Image (spheres, rainbow, N blue to C red):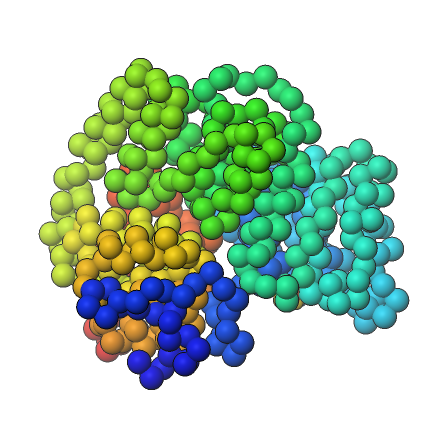
Amino acid sequence: MAHILEERQNQVSTAGANERTIDCNKASLAGSVSQRACVFCGSRVVLYPISDALHLIHGPIGCAAYTWDIRGSLSSGPELHRLSFSTDLQERDVIFGGETKLYSAALELIKAHKPNAAFIYSTCIVGVIGDDVERACRMLEAETGIPVIAVEAPGFQGSKKDGYKVACESIFKLVGRVNNPIPAKSINILGDFNLAGELWILLEYYKKMGVHVNATITGDGRVEAISNAHNAALNVVQCSGSMNYLAKLMKDKYDIPSMRVSYFGIEDMSDALYDVARFFKDDDMMEKARILVKEEISRMMPALAWYKERLTGKKAAIYVGGAFKAISLVKALRLIGVQSVIVGSQTGTPEDYELIKKLCDEGTIIVDDSNPIELSHFVKEKQADIFIGGVKERPIAHKIGLGFCDHNHERKEPLAGYEGMINFAKEIYATAMSPVWKFTK
Ligand code: SF4
């Protein structure tokens, strides 16, 4: 594989005969042009859906523009999160410091928008000039009476994954600030970002099972519920790459257990519901989960069979942020007859890749922290029919003349839950079978 940089050879493996342990969980190789985003972007995407908070980006306007309205996260109430505020640092601020500008901008915005909390993000240049954002936040909190949290995320400090950790630390600063009574069988949902309203589908399932959902972190998130998150009995973590660290912080301080789930595909969705019922050791809850799963599966199976008949033999390339999602996608694609020939992630752990290797067919390319050159080569080599990824993979697919399915921030169709599985099959079918691709080959 000549297109793989020498230093990255161990980050690629092939399932079956030539498989090797994937070297992962490390900084991107300089010059490799990783698909990962910067630390600031990582923190911003996680905190973005907290819709009654003010998000102020301390830095040049470009950082704010880059992440403006970055997710398709819907809110059932306030929509302050969809605005992008910036201190628009200029040359003069870089020379003399931007703290005063930050303080007055934040104060003006808090007075104008009356948020329930404010997140102030540091960007690369702030890390370079050394503005004391923590001090500005302390002063603002004393002046306004709302939590004002410094998100110390200069982009150059690492990669998107480090930004997830910064976001978790910032959310954790909110947790424990209020003590509202909630039912005993309460959970927090961590790592669902309510893309296209997916969270609302899950809430409906949990409601039918008799599970109370306390805080949703961060999809359709609210400051007060997050501040009360320490009172839930269980943290149910979906996007484990972004939220495992918050679950760990809450376990260490408040002794709240957590479980890792995925809401994509029939198997993983059903397991997510059963695992919660199992955790509460509640027979009635388990019975309700069984009824729900049975009803949903019998409703959707005829439709899935229709897609499977037509899609069998198609090949998919998967490259997503979190490896847990990649695992669910392999299973979901198999259900509709599609074989996964490339499976990669930006943030997978050794355990994730071991699982992927076991799950995939022989010959599947498994890759960590890939780049456009590698991905283009893999896709051509394996003759994939469709590429499933995020915003930065779309141009790779389209330049090669390949169908693309957005399974990341911007999508407009919910792909989680049972109804999401049908939408997923529909989208894969419509894209992979489109007659347009015969003109691009
Ligand atoms: S890398 Fe630095 S300058 Fe670029 S968006 Fe991230 S924080 Fe801003």
